[in-house]
Length: 221
Image (cartoon, rainbow, N blue to C red):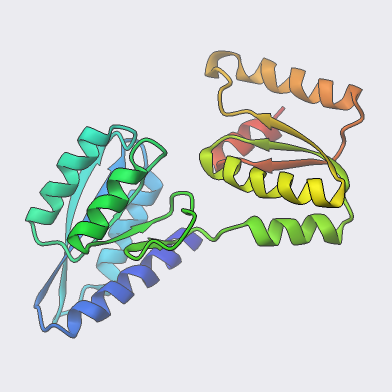
């Protein structure tokens, strides 16, 4: 529900800007990874909610492998040729530079729930907040000076670096563990072994900075 609300608000902002230009049809692009059914459904709901008799939202959808920069380039160019005002989509570490480059060059806004980028990206609208500041505040509030930090993505690695920099200043003891490279066929065994090792070391304070599916897998152990 939260994703749907956030997406709808983002699309509303795009629609408002386009309405000022007087166009009867607002072209909105969508770049979705295969299997992103929930996000695709939210996108379609947003199209329906904010389509009006005066301004019709016209979606243009492409499904692709977001880690494939060549596929991202082809789809982005295809979307741009259709006259889209903005594109809702995803990126990862292998395609993020391609996305930001095209957006900056072509002046097309890219609305995304993917991990936040460092620095000011003029045409990237982030739906996911940056957690660095709030996370540090929580650690300080609960006075954790010894904990394990589990991460699984570039976003988690970026946040970890800030945590480690602060840990060096505050003399925290942080055990950083990358769980993103665990093989799927043995992940359950690997998770159990990992937490048994943490228990043996009396590491009972753990921060999980992982994607939703990874957290679900870990919590089921």
